[in-house]
Length: 83
Image (cartoon, rainbow, N blue to C red; front, side):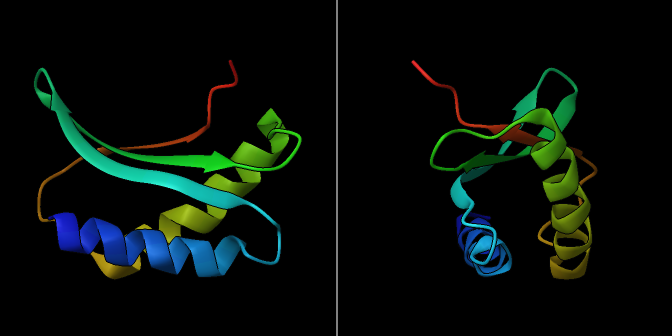
């Protein structure tokens, strides 16, 4: 799984390079009875909600195409927390 997540991260970085969006982290975890595929994005100056929505529309088909797992999961595209 780790190798698949790394390949996905590289593919997503290529997709977002033009938008100057950084793919900070890609993780797959189980919480309770649900699996979550989380993509954490960052950008100089931060990312607003509209950008996250647009990014999700780009992430979803790439994740589907790469088919990193046979397990069902919830795709969660989020921005990196600011301290």
